[in-house]
Amino acid sequence: MLSRQHDPIIAIATAPGRGAVGIVRVSGKDLAPLVRAWLGRDLRAREATYLPFPGADGTPIDQGLALYFPAPHSFTGEDVLELQAHGGPVVLQLLVARCLALAQGSDAPGAACLLPRLRLAQPGEFTERAFLNNKIDLAQAEAIADLIDASTEAAARSATASLSGAFSKQVHGLLDALVRLRMLVEATLDFPEEEIDFLQRADAQGQLQRLQAALHALQAQATQGALLREGIQVVIAGQPNAGKSSLLNTLAGAELAIVTPIAGTTRDKVEQTIQIEGVPVHVVDTAGLRESADEVEKIGIARAWGAIEGADAVLFLHDLTRCTSADYAAADAKIGALLAQKLGRQVPVIDIWNKADAVTDAPAPERGIRLSAKTGAGLDALRAALLHAAGWQAPAGGLFMARERHVQALRQVDAHLMEAAAHLAQSAQALDLLAEELRLAQNALNEITGAFSSDDLLGVIFSSFCIGK
Image (cartoon, rainbow, N blue to C red):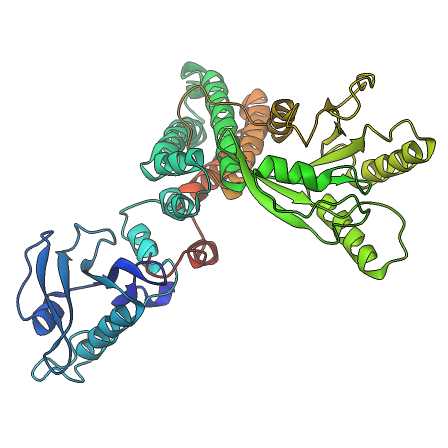
């Protein structure tokens, strides 16, 4: 897309389907001739004008509002024309086709080649132009997509905070401190004959420590923000008839999975996203884990293990009504051993003792949570355990949205600053290495806001946007 960034573009900016209002958006350099040729008049800047949108024969395609935003005072930083019409897909497509025909001069006598390169926009191209024209940075551009995709209120609020620049402001604060430290180091390297220890006089050690402390605080916030965006993948596992489907239904508040007393009822994965304190939790119900000769059930069990291996947390369900049975306990122990073997210590396994309503005199389990999927007793403890497993901490202040890309970049910065601290401790013997680590740390920070980004990275980011945004 970068090679065609100077082409004028057009797209339907509203979601596919029918609606009360639909928007067609055009962005490019000097759209005023196109406006006059199509609408028969000039438009006042940033003022809505109600008028007909004529077709090739002069009859209106529709009537609606036209808004003109001259550069640089627009979302993209270019001239932008927005037509707000009735939200029927055919109407909007006719408006796009009419604009393309006009731009190429195919049916506009005396106005040929108004915008000869006008073309349909690629996904995310309007936002990409806003970034390339310095209207927003890369973290803010990503926040636009995150706001559109937000699945919880907390995620939406955090994305709005990132869009307003909350995350970028903290990154720029780290960059300013890092640049100041680099200047001290470079000054010491440039003037070695001077008997002035720039680093000691300027408390370079203290500056680096404060920089690391600020970075760690930002890392903690970014991790929480990434959790709000990505959520946590939770898999419910256990033997047949342990109550896995009932637990999914209770957590979701809807009858999503079929529940019967027949072992092996669930043959495939059933997924549902819920939210706990604003954190998206993607819950997956799986087939009961056991030895089976049924080919269909064996496929379901294999898929269950596949889901388990990709989980962020596993709920291992035990049936309190059968836990005193030696055969049942042995099968549970075998599943537990397999979970430990496949997951190790990286993925938490939470033991859930279900059907507490049916066995009121059962002793309290040594580990895990006792609950009833039927009555909902114990669900609050389960929700708290899931948030703890995800590493969620309710923020004391504001929270911004972040992506795994941002978290990884901050980890790189942390690693470079740790190396820099080790070199700084060696004083003059390692100043070249110290300067290099600080430079690499700055590059990693710049990748977050897009001050230093490859074209491939931009292509990946903006291709995930919807068309017209």
